[in-house]
Image 1 (cartoon, one colour):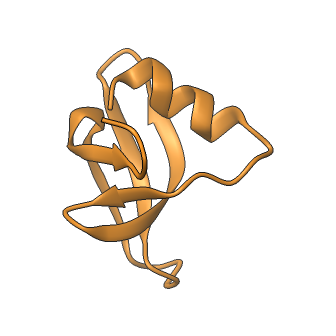
Image 2 (cartoon, rainbow, N blue to C red; image 1 turned 30 degrees about the vertical axis):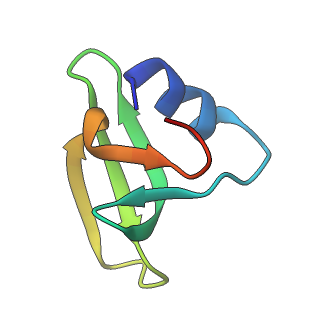
Length: 62
């Protein structure tokens, strides 16, 4: 996904299904300048990673 879409999802009040390598994630923060997103993997709030936005996939979108 592109950085703009990641920011739209992060800013939205709606819930979107986003995955990283097939695992469900929640977008915690988006660094637009660097094209990076911090995501929570699964339901563990301590399990976070900062990854390139292009590694994120929104379910139902190409």
